[in-house]
Length: 196
Image (cartoon, rainbow, N blue to C red; front, top):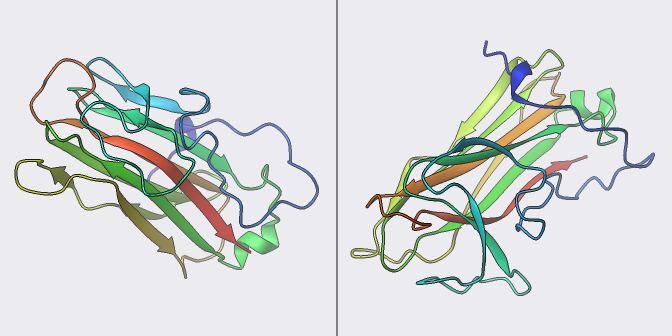
């Protein structure tokens, strides 16, 4: 089993007595607060940056109201959030009933440079031991041979056994031409929901 205790912090306090069970548990998923709430695991090249939609050589986003995205650079950029489910107001009984956990993310490339993308989501127990993990298939987008507009990746966990108390969500990538600046994958609209 993989230990993940050093990978995260515990959220401070419970948000109300009854959480909104269908709400997005990730904070700042669109970059409206720059990089607030995100732990920068790898911050290579010119580092993570928040840009306005659609950006240079960019694509319009398919959902109205989304105005920003996170941009990666020429070396890997990976960021993460850790969700403490008890601190978010879920009970042991609710979590031990193995509710469906759905993770979603949106990513795209530029029209002038290829990029790579990855996403990893882990369900952890109270001791930060891995219960179940999802890793997206490695993605490389090449604007010379395909449409690199916004795409959504979704995964739902179910039947993973009792004991889940934390969820880690991480994603990122880089460009494929090693150009200085922010020519790598763009991400926005990340979400993690627990269906109780």
